Structures are given as structure tokens and as C-alpha cells.
Image (cartoon, rainbow, N blue to C red; front, side, top):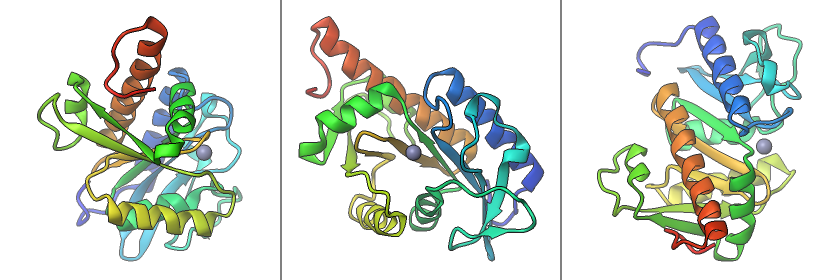
Length: 218
Ligand SMILES: [Zn+2]
């Protein structure tokens, strides 16, 4: 999405709802878990984001509302924005991402715990890595940082901001025993990153079960 051309809110809302339903269908956003956002405009900063507590199985365009640079609702929508709105705002601003997607998969949850002691995991040797923006070889080594989960969102948002500034090349991050955040220059790119990273998480975990050599030690 070009920053010069502001996005249509109804169109973005419909697209975000569709992404949410697809993530639910893949088992990456069961129940009310996960949240999805896209930048409407940069000046003033406006973000379309899924409302808190909505079941992703039936996420609808009406479940998407607008927030400002502080995560506060804008307009007359009666819903409450996702509790993790500040994390979306932070990623949109620090990384200049146009779309931010957050999933709660089984595999990502397991890996975020197993690798918490190392504050992240390296993934390399997989062809699917080439689905990440700018990656051209399976030999690429992708660092996926892990942050401790926290219910204090301003504090967690600051830690996310610090991490993104320290690791400029990352395509996503994991919150421990919680889930994945990834992003993109477009909503399509962000959804592709979810698909790639969730594929890699599942492959790493299943490789251990199958007793094969994995691209990261689990
Ligand atoms: Zn979450």
C-alpha cells in the first residue's frame, strides 16, 4: 500500500476480516485469539484493527475499528480495540509496516517457550524462507526474537520498540507462550509472512517428532 494513497476504511475492514477468518481456518487464531491491523493513513496516523473479544471464526468488517497513534478509538464505533493495539501501533510506526498480523498457533507457542532461554531462534536451510521479504536463498539465516509475555501493554510496547530497533532485519517476533507478530509493506505481504513463519514453526516442531534433522534445535 502506498503511503501517499490513503486506504479505504471499508475495503481494509473487509480485507482484515477475511484474513482473520483464514487464520482461524488454519488453526492460527482460534477462539478470540489473534488480532489484525492495517494502516489507514500516516498523517494523521490512523490504524484499522480488529475489536477485542471477537471470534475469528466469524470475524466481520463491522468488527474492525479505527484507532489513533496512542491506540485510542476514533469515531463512533462502540467496540473496544484489541488489548494489544499498542503493539500494532508500535510496529506500524517503528517498522513503517502497513499491516500487522498476530496469530496464536500451537507450534509458535511451543517454540516460543522452548527457545525462550536463548531469547529467540535461528531458522536456516529451508526453501520456504524465500517467502520472506528480501530473502533470496534457502541458506538465509532468519533470527526470530522472543520476548517474555506481559499484560502491561505500554511496557511491552516499549520492549517491542527497543527490539525492532536492535534487530532491523527481522520479519517477525514471538511473545513467549503467546504468539507471533509479523508485518508487511502490504496486507498481502503480511499474510504471506504469517503463512511462511507458521509453516516453518510447524516444520521445526514436527521434525523433532519425526526424528529428522531440523533447521533449528528444538
Ligand atoms: Zn495475542
